[in-house]
Image (cartoon, rainbow, N blue to C red; front, side):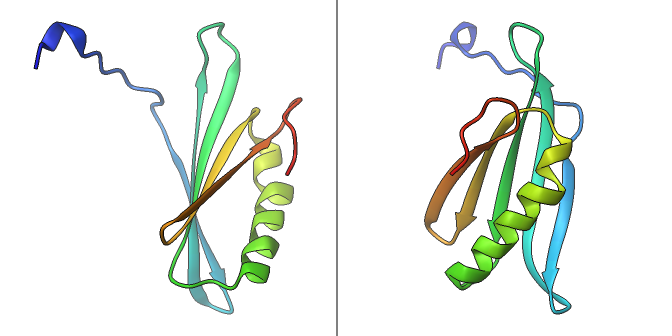
Length: 99
């Protein structure tokens, strides 16, 4: 591989991490990081990982709570949701469209 063609750079110097439990049992983990885009505007990105086989209605409740309680504290961004091999995403904050 030609090293001059590969660029690596740190996107964030910190990642915030939340453990999400339901009834005292670990259910999911949320990782969020903030950064400045090329224009210097604050943005964020999050990854929400559900553990095991979580019922869709429970996932929806957790996603709604995460949006209402945690994502409102962050700059505009996108959250990627993982449940096993299934992946989805949604925008939050600013002028982002809601799903």
